[in-house]
Image (spheres, helix red, strand yellow):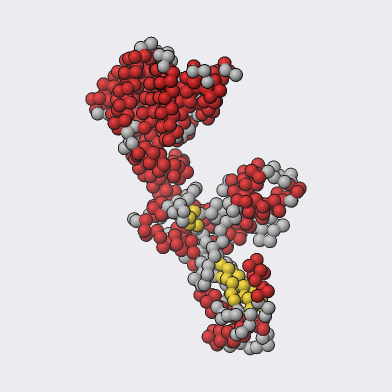
Length: 605
């Protein structure tokens, strides 16, 4: 409409709007659309029923006239091809579906700045919002113009509604569309307007509608293999026709830069429950959308992203560049992986239990670097419960150890009980890897409680087992732990020898996290021997690695140690900056080590 108004002076013989009703239940036929134009010029003419004869009259009426026709809301290409005029007349077509006719311009969502401007104009001075709040409101509406208009009008009319409360309603998928309703805006029922496209899909293609519903399981953009997985297809290529058909209907978006598809946030509730939002009755049939179809898709989604998590963890364990590659693969799908685990943890059947059991172990290395300890506890609790339900003792032992590690990161003594249970099961089922891991974990716990000699004995047992079974990563961990324990006992030179051995192994197997830990521990020993400059060089190397792989805990310890060493060299300002950074990281992880950083800062105002 805006474009037509800007062009109207070029078409002095007339400007016509034809409401094609493509999104409605009874779209206007091409014959009626041509008759609409003819009667605008020749209202007395009696028109034949034959479409080819009417088309001849249509072209004759427009011949030589500078007329602009806006054919709004086309149902498809076939509806508008007969309307194509010859110059100097012109035709503009709008549609929710892609039209194979002349030049096409796909209208995108508003840019953030344009969305903010639109909201400011609607809200007026009576309810001025900060730019950050405007951006949050625009993001909650997914920058859809109609949704922005409705949200802005609603807040302008109801200044008594707290913005935070309204944003919470928009963030919740269960209340999002109810919040986007306003009588002050034409077409102000956003859910009803968006559901028009879903109505046509339900009326025309139930199988495609069921596939569209399945896409509601994705909380974030997804790739073609993921779509094929939730549709139960053997190969990603098989998903392409349906994906393209949904894009043509404007029910799915494609981002060429990322190579990913996205279901608009405001369409997701409609896709998930079309029987709630659409006028078209959804038949109860095997190929149509239904609650059972959606639940099947959630299970397939969970299984697919467990496989993605396992692949990311396996890449990490390859070492060297695989570490960052594996972490990047996890980061790209973190939201999907979390959704998959949530579904599995909440499931009641055996398939869900098996997925819940496998999720924590499937990504043990990457999850330790990416997931907050309290969230890891939730995953591990679900995995442990499932392992016990299914009687898988090895996995039970794994998750008892994992829970011990997570609680140890939070500074709670209950970790020891988990490690002892893990050790008992490992010995019962004859699993040396779990036995060695449990001994090492117990050593860490006793050392943290001020029992370094007891820790040394446990670490030595772990080291012997790791070497016997060829567990190089475990061998490196045991050597590093022995170094820390001997340092506590005042044997710094002996500690340095152990940390150097760990560093050699970490470099050989490409264990980037192990390298950073060994470098930081070596720095601690040299600092204790009065070699602060040498220590700082080691800390900086460790810090670079930990930042590269996103090890926030390691980065916190590196920064803490750098702060102490720089202060020893007489640079208190830089030292304080590192210590403040360490404190922020420790606090974000709820680590008890935050108290040490806070105490240092109190002593160095």
